[in-house]
Amino acid sequence: MSVGVPPPTGVARLVDLVEDDTDVVVPLGNGEPVAFLDELEARAASLRGVRVNQMHPLRRRPHHQGAYGDRLRHVSYFLSAAIRSDFSSGSLDLVPNDFHRVPTLLRRRCRRPLVVVAASPPDGMGIVSMGVTADYAAALLGDAPVVVEVNPNMPRTSGSHRIALSDCAGWFEAATDLVEVPSRPPDDVDRAIAGLVAERIPDGATLQIGVGAVPNVVAGLLADHHDLRIHTELFGDALAGLVDSGAVRLSGAEGEPTIVTTTSFGSNDLYRWLGEHDVVDFRPVDHTNHPRVIGTQRRLHAVNATMQVDLLGQCASESLGHHYVSSTGGQADFLRGAQLAEDGQSFIVTHSTALDGTVSRIVPELSPGAVVTAHKNVVDKVVTEHGVAELEGRTLSERAEALVRIAAPQFRDELRAAARRITST
Image (cartoon, rainbow, N blue to C red; front, side, top):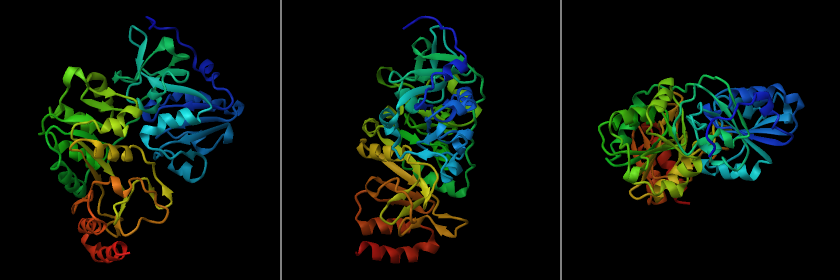
């Protein structure tokens, strides 16, 4: 590895690397190289057949909205609030996937791949860190040319997402504030659900918990636990608080990391915390989310959310009927991995109702067009504010009855009648 920092190259010269039919791959969230994409869009009139491949962008851009036609088009692997309306209007594309498979899909579909990442300032050896994300971009390091946008606001973090600038096609510096991603404050229903989950998580468990109201409360309720580990796709403020509480083991046998993730969203306090605490190990998503890797974790407990559950246990977590909201992400990865893990458990959490109690989220059949994110055979436990339905190993009629019991009371009679029709045919 070369010692020292090679001189920077201007962003305009590095955008010159984008030829016709180039597939530009950029990280999700705050890993986005903002100045590079600004320059790429500024010269869109001279491009032809260029695609930007990205999951979950936090900033809305003209190329998301189809401003440049097929000269510069966005290809998504997970919709965010910034681009849902653009997908609905047909101005960008969505590739179905399980999160751990995204690096493989990119290797197969990208024609002239160019990986462009935001990163921390270099150290004295000229090595930068991809900071708050590793995801699929880190998995592609060494497989394609890499351009680095050094952002002085990006924290340096540990993990296998570090890059020697001497190995890159070029680098430049551009200061961009990181985007904060606040969580919705929990309500009484969130707290009830979180309590039912937390009481089933033992000391010594390994946690996969995302961000959101219920996961945040779960993490807070585990502060009096001992010897916890974290193996998750998404590290948020609540998990940082859990680490600070002393409930999480900070080193394993022979120094192996005990806190592993592939990306991080949250507050500016979280981003500062990550730069100040060298305890979180960022790994490429084909490691963190591979079911076989997840299956090696001790007492893996996975907590994920859904929008609708039918009486067979199928979960629609990415679309409301025909309306796409996100994508599969890592939900299926961790449900499968929890099945493989010794003493593993998985929890699918949801409010029992929507629209001020007028609609049940436990339904006889998923809404027409709804996408099955978690098929019935991998769903272990479903949790609402009314209880826990244990589904794995149950018959169809037992599963249906367990789900009826955790539905809102006003919907149970009609659900029970539907269950008799469904399980007797």
